[in-house]
Length: 234
Ligand code: ADP
Image 1 (cartoon, rainbow, N blue to C red):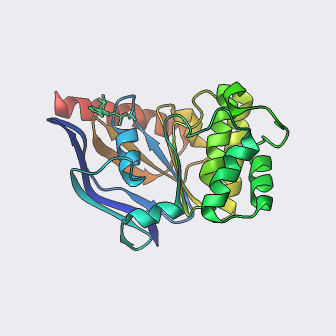
Image 2 (cartoon, rainbow, N blue to C red):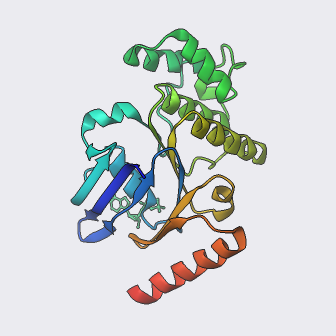
């Protein structure tokens, strides 16, 4: 079994607060990893270290068989917090800027715009997009370069219920193309149909990591894991 991403004792301290503590997490290649946990548990902190937005205090990150380097970011697409958009440009233009950076053909832009359902937005500027559309554009930008790893932090925030179904379909399709995907969420049901493996972060620690089980079981487990971790810390 090949792991595309592996962390060893990954730790992040903000002053004296341990936002991530000794997280050793493994993501199998060409799977969907659901990173679960209540709000404030440390999911974003973890994903920000993997995507080079913040530096670990301690620990290691391994990507595709070797120690993480900044160049790996060419193969790691991410959507964390608000998407990096130019509001005075159209969806196409926003993508074109990145396509130039990566040396990609215009045909790839068209393809990705279709993939995220923004092919008909024409001259509309990104600043006028709904929250869901902005998320889709952010997702499109993250995908543009066909990254090996796609990191999505609470991606369905702001997407309407129809969008959530489409989102699942898209994830499914990307996995079919060979991509590995990490999705974080605090809403269990969102991850159920798409994740192969799940990890649960509670108060900065990886409290659980396993292949996915049945929905009812996972729900129980989720509550139990959070309760137990709480008892340990109090
Ligand atoms: P999640 O993504 O699971 O909601 P976060 O990783 O965003 O959780 O946050 C984990 C904890 O770290 C929270 O208590 C948050 O307040 C704290 N935190 C996040 N970023 C910073 C920062 N830059 N400085 C200090 N504390 C932070």
